Image (cartoon, rainbow, N blue to C red; front, top):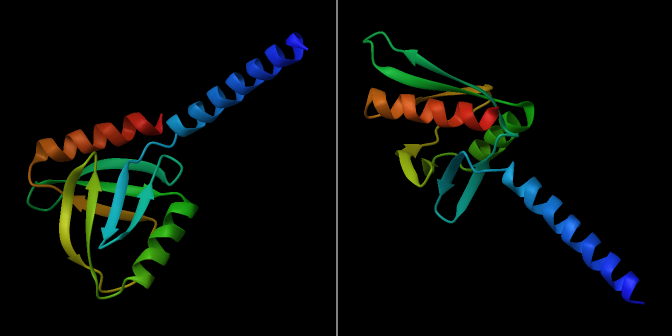
Length: 131
């Protein structure tokens, strides 16, 4: 009887460890928020990120979504047309008071930042999570 209990405890610990490990790979990278609704993107929803320069030489970040990520963006923007949302990463508001005018159907979105350093930091953080 004790052997069965010991085996069950070991199995439970192992399964719990696997659960924690699977949760660790789903770190929130970007969040779209509208009032009480939100949409979370993890490494399963983002396929790439690149640091770019606009015509004036200011840095921006281009985020490319997986097919599932693009579907989520499309659905979220369709369901919240003419509403205002914020985009958040690492508890920092990247953009706020963005009015959703159209359904977004593209696989990538460009994010602008207040400083080039913020854009670089964001890119580095996303790249690290995608590896």
